[in-house]
Image (cartoon, rainbow, N blue to C red; front, side, top):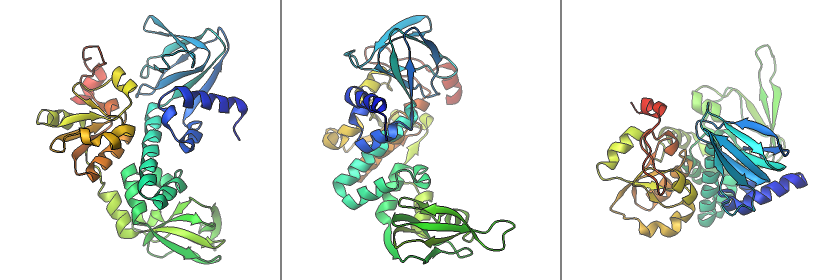
Length: 367
C-alpha cells in the first residue's frame, strides 16, 4: 500500500508533468519502481549525474537551484507554470542541486521511462482492437521473458497464443521431454520441480501463479526439458508453440537501422519522424524531422504521405518500435532508428537554435 506522501507525489507528477500526465493508472503504479524520489531540506546540497541518456530531474515539491557548468537555473514545483524537468548531464559530468525550500525531487532514467511509455501505448492499442489481447498483455507485464523482447514481438506472440486447460495434479511439462511450447499461467497455480546435481529425486524449487511463464529454456537451448511443472489447482494456460516462438525470436517484425545507415537513407529520400513529446522535440531533435507524438499518431496518420518512406525515432527506441509497427500495419514504408536519438552521433538542434555538432565521444562512435 502506498503511503499518503508517496500518493501525493505521484498525484503531482501525473497532474503536472509529461509524460506522467499521459500514463495509465497501471503504468503510474509502476513508476515507483523505475524512478528515484529524494527529499531535501532547505539549504541541503547534493550532486547528481544522469546515465548516458541524460536523465530527467523533476521538482515535485519545493524550490531548487541547479548549478551546471558555471550557470545557475531555478526550478520550482507544480506552481511553476513552465512545468518542465531539468535534463541531467551525461555521466561522468554532474549537476549541483541546492534546495532553497524543503523539496521532493524525482530522478527518472529516460530509457526506462521511454520503455514504460511505449508499453502503455502498446496496451492501449490492443485494448482498442482486441479486449482479450489487452488482458493478456496486462497479465504478463512483469514477465521477465517478455520484458526482454521488443514490444511488437510481444503483441504478435499474444495474438498467436492458444488456450489450454489442465486439472490440479497434472504435469504440464516433464523433465527430460523435448520442448514443444512456451506457457503462461492465465488462471491458477503450479509448482516447479528440478533435479539438483546430487539429488536422487526432483525437489520443488518454485511456486508459480497467474502471470508467471515457463518452458522457454528448452526452446532457446534446443536441449531437453530440465524441469517438471505440476498444476496445484485447475489452470488455464496461454500456449505459444515452438515454431511460432522460434520464428518471432529469429525474425523480428520491425526493421531497425543503424544511425550511420539512417543518415545515408535521409540523403536518398527517407524522412525522419520524431514520435516523442513536443517538449522533448523542442529541447533536442534531429534537423529536418517531422514531429508527431506517438499518442497522436493514430489520429494524425492521414497527415503522412503514404508514398513517402520514413525513419521513425524516439529517445531510446521503445516508442519508435510501437510507431513503426502501427505504421507498417497501415502499409507505410517505415524503419526504426536503432537506439533512438540517444545513440544519434550526428548534429542535433533545439527549436529556435542552430544545430549542435556531436560531442567528441559521439563522433568517435560514428566513425
